Image (cartoon, rainbow, N blue to C red):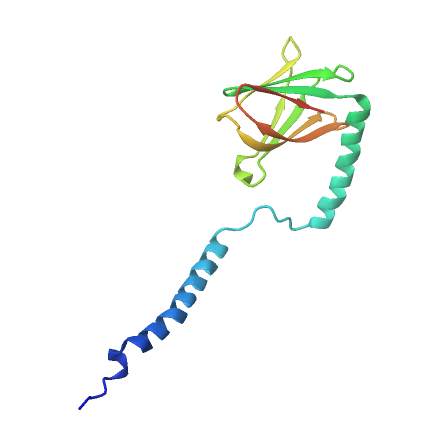
Amino acid sequence: MNEQQAWYKQFWPWFLIILPLCAVVASFTTLKIALSNSDSLVAEDYYKEGKAINMDLSKVQYAKQLGMQFSLEQNHHEVLLTQHGGPAYQAALKVEFYHPTLAEKDLKLTVTADANHVYRITLPDVLTGPWEVRLEGFDGKWRIHQRVELKDNAQLWLN
């Protein structure tokens, strides 16, 4: 008659073994991805950074009281910052560009104005997309912080 096949020669046991095996392989792959790609946005000392943010807000409010306003123009690899409001500021300016997700793209620069009171920054690459732009006086008394969508050959207002 019909002779019974061994279990390892049948389809259903292997089908039932493959399903959990795929889940185990996928979980180990997910674990490897999680361990190799650390999150650079997590702060280790969040309490101190939170207190620093409150101090930063007072600098931003002071800049608004003064009426500080700058225009930002990007022409290919050059960024031009020109003051349009507030008391004339001619000292060096701390300029920081923060990418919202890629910390390795962040830029921190100190620039001085030319004879026309324009701050010129030469960049290695054209900055496009969402960025956090921070302008701060060299003395650290005021700060302008704004999230902008940077485009080539476009003018933006920072206030």
